[in-house]
Length: 124
Image (cartoon, rainbow, N blue to C red; front, side, top):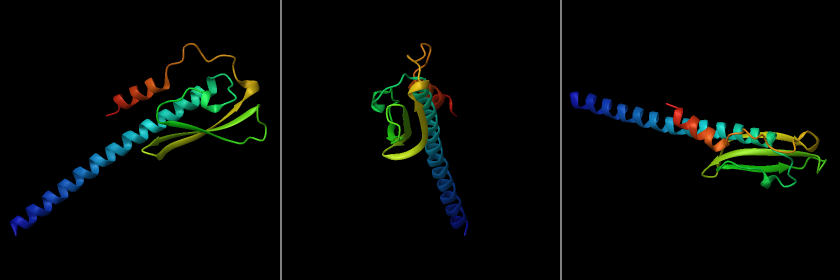
């Protein structure tokens, strides 16, 4: 009887440990993806107009795609998606108008990858 109770306790503890470690891994990936998407959206908003969306700077693991806007050359609808092993973790849409784009990106901007690395390392 005591061996059964001990066995159930050990199995329960191992299951809880596995759940905790898996959850922490998923939460870390989700935090990185959210940070990367926000950083990439900020870079896109600050960057000068490019006719080809692939010419914009990109964080590693972040994909850019476009949706036809009906006003090519003046408006871009850019979908920013952070992926891990081909699975989308976070996504946002950026509207970029040629008339509102600056002539050059800000000179004091920090690399989005550096911010995400900092946030991921700072997470418990």
